[in-house]
Length: 593
Image 1 (cartoon, rainbow, N blue to C red):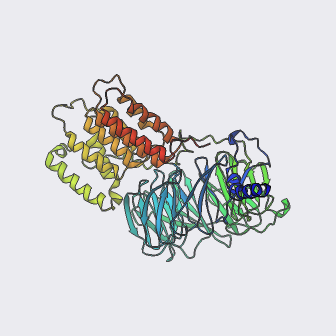
Image 2 (cartoon, rainbow, N blue to C red):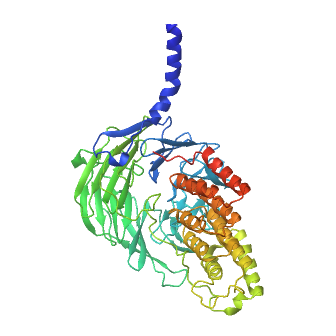
Image 3 (cartoon, helix red, strand yellow):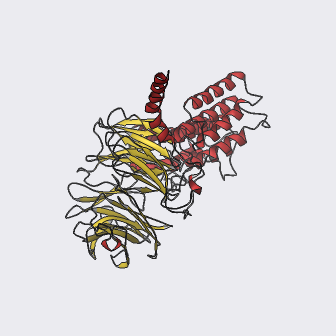
């Protein structure tokens, strides 16, 4: 009997202990006191490549053998994604915590916060650099000489051939454009609408950082020799000549990391020194990090062993052996040394939590900073994007003020033109013009006292088809326009189209659409349209599936409220209940802790 008991116990421990170890977590990571003590740790079972990717209170890790795993900041395992083949270690995350990963077969996949695949794109070959996520959630993907841009929901916006293969990991600059260097030594700036500016370099830089010098945007290119070069972008110059370059002061040693903020930038040198520099390379201050020999460090960093962060809290110099923090004025805030080297550079979250992956395949997590971030935060996710592309309020279209645009013939002509371009996935530089036209026509009645309900300038079917078209190029910046039309246009068919479009766009980081649906569909409304309730429920379900918790539980509550509206036919109630059941089966009802 005892032997059988021991066998059963051994069997349980063998299979359960790894799971239990991964489950260890803390109840409230935000209130954990700051100190060197570990918050939690878990075995990964794979050597982690690069740094943990942090966003929205969670971390995503890419393993050497292609595993992709995610953990909540409390230690709760979120998901372990099967990339259907080995995943390459070039990962990006969006503001809504979507993760973009590519496998060795060249299939790029978008994954939501709970590990559900949202969409995929077959590139034919694996990517060599991480995708870049733009301010409105659009994704820039580079492969050889091609760059393609997709909406957050996977719809194509444009694809261009740069004429030479990308030779440097693209970065998002201070204008929301992508900057990189090609193998032919062209430095290129590609904006969100596919417009390219380029200038020839003499050699490949080690790193690029972007600056904002008032009305001018610039880039500092840092070379292994310590030399630096500045490229300035002047939007007031004619196309093809907007970029110019000048040499600036050299660094005293080889740089291993750099980051810009405003008109200044910080550089971490090989010997462990951190320098704050002005836009001309002039030194504002110099401080030693934990890596400097004077601080009992190695004094011998190399590329890939360090990174820099700089936000309103100050400057953080991270390396495989620890973190040093400074105020913007250069005063040291703290040093946190790790007991052993990491397999990649640790990552520091907005909550002051450090994620460090050891060479023993263990993720260790520490609370090292109690200073909170003060930038605007969305209700459900992290800090708001650094800027906006203006697609919520684009400049006036060329058709504005031309009353002939309201004729049915002209509406049909422009609609057919836009539809063909959008369906081709090549809207590119026409995006601001087309989006402006669609918004002007859909919202023609806003602020127009001459609007006729009987003979509107843009009929309901015409508005519906434009709303549907807008959804295919829409982004988080388009959502406020859509719920504004939902609130103000009282045609049920137009309201349904807005709800459908919000679901297609897939992103509503504030959950404001839920308020619009809830307000319009109260039991006190004697004219509730059952099909509108169904459209609103379907829209909420799509938003829940895209974003996952914590947005999803709130969406489910609204859908449950709809399913109990006394005036709804039982067939509609049943359809909403089925939609809710589907969200429950996917585990989207649970609040992550």
